[in-house]
Image (cartoon, rainbow, N blue to C red; front, top):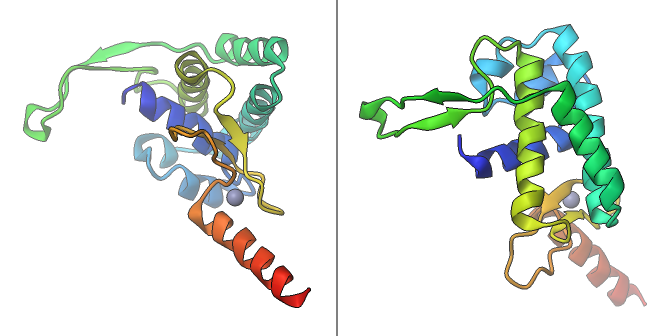
Length: 174
Ligand SMILES: [Zn+2]
């Protein structure tokens, strides 16, 4: 993984549904090595980590830089990254890369360390102004706006369409 993947991973966990183990496994299917080994204890841990990620991103969105720094540093201290150099499989055209947690790390700790690292890197690379929360009613999904005009309001085309269709109907009624 590179830093962009870790940033995406932080957002995925922040937005993940953590109702039960199966749901969380499905949310994290992109990381099969971790998701397949998740236990009830991991679920409990990751629920708290996801809440902490949301709190951090919320602080970024509202420009509370001290709260943001404190929360991200708390996560990094609790789930310290343990970088490991890894040689990619030549036949998969992968090169040297660094894993942020080694393969022996328990799933929750590995996922949490990767997410904390991703969020920190996301703040370093993009600052705080590009983080946002979906404007669609009853959504609240967090996103990182990497568009050139920085005008993103919604987490997805689906939410944007939903709001635009509702507004269109509203206008036709009035
Ligand atoms: Zn949305």
